[in-house]
Length: 275
Image (cartoon, rainbow, N blue to C red; front, side):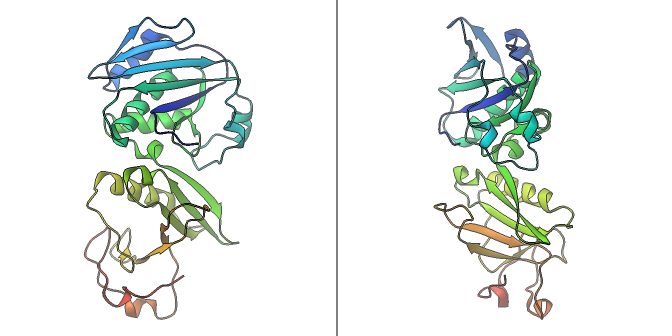
């Protein structure tokens, strides 16, 4: 599911409508000022201080796509999604242009709706997966008025082989960046956290680049080769591939000296491609 209009969806275990006063209070606590306005009787309307309007539409039916959507590390159990009985659709109008203000505002609004309802899952309108409602809210609350990368850029996981798995980002393209495709052994600690950190850096530092053939790593001793490969999703642009804890014979002898935590410049590996 994807949308250029600022949207979000909240899945409900019961069809309980949000209390406007609580939505305003929770949004205000997170740094967004709302004012309740009269509108259609089956919708909630708010004015967003600083410009923009918010419309919340309750729907007393399950989300039509939720049960068939991909899942990720932060998704609820499939049974939770399958058992939801209704959902909310939040739409913002006349916000400042650009994905970041859209994602910040919709993250806060959606968190306020989560706190005001029996919510079980939530996602932004451009998202690829539904997140557990408590995790969605926790990510936004930790970010405050900054971007909550964890809900702005979704991550799905897949098994690559018997002993390796992969993580694929969904949403960096909206920020003019390439998606990340990171593989690791199934017993590697911190692979998912590393993808989240890289995604955040790519959004918040538009000058950050990952040239093909350079290496990156979490420590001075870790060297992960930067590759560009076709996307695992047919029809999508190429992605940056990083194979964690994967070494080839003679690898160490050719490693360039790292110049920082995030990436190192080329050297002998600039034209090499290891798989």
